[in-house]
Figure 1 (cartoon, rainbow, N blue to C red):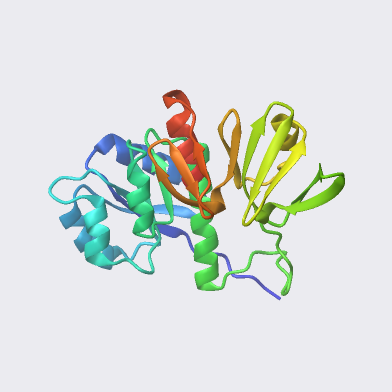
Figure 2: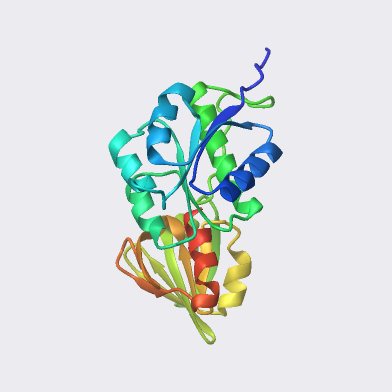
Length: 250
């Protein structure tokens, strides 16, 4: 059996500032499966370029002259083209995901987060094109981030909590509360001990006393996170606020 070499994913850059284009072009040049296919500096140019370039992904700034990047999304309804929003303002992430964007990168963009977003785009592209890398076997099971589990002691029993069932965790001294979909379980242990056992990247420490499963988040309003089952968690002070938001949404 032979495997075809995957084509590079064409990237269209939409930003009104040239330094932002330079950063993105530099990062794209470091990723073997990406290539820059065009640069636009406003929504009008972008609306013309998108059907011509037929990009595999659009890097879209929010603050653009005349019309914003979010308005462009609403006008064009890019249902089949992944969009990565870029902005210096973390609060725009909520509006962005309401438009079903793939990722959000907070400026100044860090390369490790750009690579994470680029990897997500590659997975989407491979699924759409049916590409399978060498070593892929039909029927091979790929473990998801929620397939792990954690053993805890509670009510004189040993309980096995699946990562996907844990919505949030609260530490208070020698006790830890696990907020699951329909119950709260208290265990005598420390949050730091629990944190070491949470090997899945879906768990984000939002505060010195709280950890949230980002797949269980319903909304972020300022510095308050609300989970799907209504639990409210704080986000740390302004010094770490943007970094935590970026980790949640990337």
